[in-house]
Length: 94
Length: 268
Image (cartoon, each protein chain N blue to C red):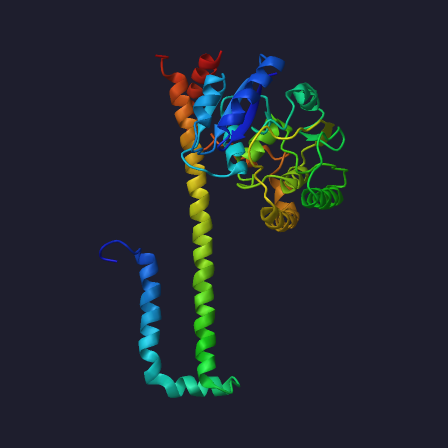
């Protein structure tokens, strides 16, 4: 974040993910209890499920961001081409 | 009527010269606009030397986005209609007059050049034929009007529809059956005109065998997406003038007007 290679917008996401992973071992009995309550036979599979779902969500978010960027890029280059044409049209012919 | 011919070209240097020359010999008065879609060869300068106006995209955006660039330019510069044509010489310029006729007469907003109403001068590969038949069936069903050749890239477009396409209503990769469906839902009138299509002059077609499979999948998907967007298209379409997001409309009006004036001065 400090070197501006990562937007603050995404930094909090990674921070949360890191914190979650760090804390998980300390609350393993809580995790176990929750997963048993939910009927998971093998508690780690519950953890994997959560991880898988959150990664999918992050991926979806990236796809959306990527689509937006692609579109902005397209519109920008179209505008650029048109403006360049106008510029050449208005320039006196040499 | 002020008409411009829009030709998107990507690495078509060997074809574009003869194509433009043929057009000029048939329709000498027609303004030709070539959209150079980030070609790595000298497509742009060949087209310019042949007497066309060239819009040069900084990198390859794809067929649809290139067409949209040309359409946006035509809207901004005040053309009444435009004709889309491929750069590979498949489309015979002798059909240009027939193609623009329904648009010029105000009978249609979109005139599609159909090679199946006309005559095909060569046999299409089986995969292509099956794909076209599938899209033709689906499109005809969705818009309740017989469309024989929805994959045709030889089209004439009215100014109203140009504005619609210049906004957010044009797919960047392959505008096709889905574009027709969108235009129909938005209230534009569509008409097919018989044309003949020839074999391309040289080089590879943009659709290989594998890409045809992906193409069919993608097109079917986007046709159904168009169907899902029906409501919003009806709202944002032809009968709702302030919803047409004109490419230039977001700029202060004075700037656009000045530019229009100077552009027409330069071309005239």
